[in-house]
Structure formats: C-alpha cells, structure tokens
Amino acid sequence: MIREKVAVITGGSSGIGKSTALALYDKGFKIYTVSRRPVDWENQEMFHIQGDVTEETEIQKAFEQVFAAEGRLDVLVICAGFGISGAVEFTTLEEAKKQMEVNFFGAFLALKYGGKMMRTQGFGRIIAVSSVAGEIAIPFQAFYSASKAALAKLLEAYSGELAPYHVECVLVMPGDVQTEFTKFREKSPEGDKEYEGRISRSVSKMEQDEIKGMPSKKVGQFIAKKAIQKYVRPVYGVHKGYGFLLMLYRILPRKWSLYLIERLYGN
Image 1: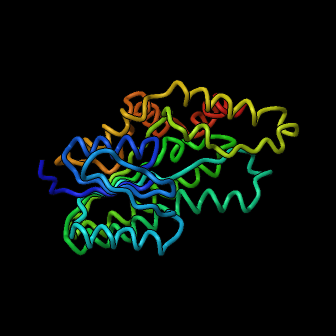
Image 2: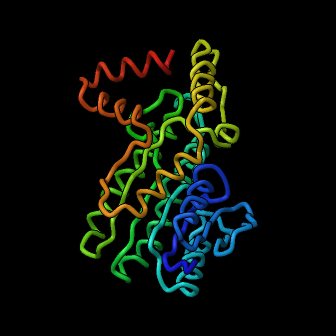
C-alpha cells in the first residue's frame, strides 16, 4: 500500500494515543508517534520519535523531522496527558503546574508546530483529545478538569486563526475509557480526613467507572474515522451516552447540573 497521508500522534505510546495510531495505520496513513516512552512499532511505515511534550526544543525537532522526511502533515492528534486528583485546598502549586504543563502547555506546543506546518501547506486536520470532565468539572479532579477546559478554548480560538488556511480543528471528548491512565493517576489523599473521606470515595468511584469504561480501541477507531471524514463538527462526545449527558448539562439550569455532579462524585 502506498501511504501518501501522514499523521502525527502525541502520547502515542499507550492508551488512546496508541489505539489511534493503529487505527489510522489501518486507514492507510503513515504514522509518527511522539512520547517520552520508547516504542518499537512492528508495522512498516510506523515510526516513533522519543520526546517530552513539555520540552519545546524536543517538540520543534520532532515536527521538523516529520517535515524533512515527508514534506506534509495531514492529521495531528493530540493525546498526551495524565491526571492528578485531590482537593483544591490541599493541592500544591507544583502539582497544579505539572498538570497544566503536560495537558495544556504540552498540547499548545504540538498545536504551535503542527499547526504551523498545516498553515504553510494550506490544509490539514487537528484532533485534540479532551474529556467530558473538561466541560463537566469533577469534584476532587479540579485541575484535570481545568486543564481540559483550557485546551478546549485554546483549540476553539486557534480554529478561527487557521480556518482561512483550510485547516480544521476538532475536539473529541471521551468519557470513561479503559487505559493505563487510571493506574498512572497521581492521587493525593491529603485532606481526606478534613473532607470526611469524600476525596477517596470520589476518586474510587471515578476509577471504577474507568475500569468499566469503553475500550481504548473504540476511541481510537472513532478518532480515525473523524480524521478522514469529509465534513466534521468542532466538538464530539465519543459515546452516545456521553453526548446525551453533555446535552443535559448544557440545557439544564446550571444549579441542577452541579447538584447532580456533586451527588455522583462529590459525596
């Protein structure tokens, strides 16, 4: 198969990123993944660039490497991210900065250099993986929710800047997904006594939902479909159930919505 189209996936070594890379490969793309962890792809035309999304020089070099080798970039998928949990009151500034550094500023660097390639060539599609938590903020996961909300607004603004150059931006919001994200969440129980055990109960509930969530392969296939679809919307919920939840959240009085979320994850 001659693979003319090129995709770059940040955070492509595991979880949704890895599933997306494989799904796009099946769609005929030449694949470049970028992450801190090494990956030895078995498939031909799948390549890995080891780099930290929070290090600007490493991300700049990664995109320069792709451009030098391919001369084009058709699809950029931004998947790199991690989560912290804990009470806002007991979260350290260092922890909060680390969360934003990866999920927001890491995404910004991929947008900066990937978007530059696409603007210059006059075409492309950027897909950023956010979260339902970016719109429906989850108690005791405030900084994760904030990082994904910030990413959504950054992409929304950037889409207006890139539109004249035929570059489209799409935000994908999965809900609960079975990935290593759950295992690698940085959990802080600090303040659980003061909050009467609500921190540990809330995080435990969220992790049980994730363990029972949709397979990452399904999310990867969804993203790959949007990568090649002729017409796309700016925002998608991956699962119909989450799409319905988001719709309810938007149309209900905010006081009711916040009460429901507090009952689910704040008790």
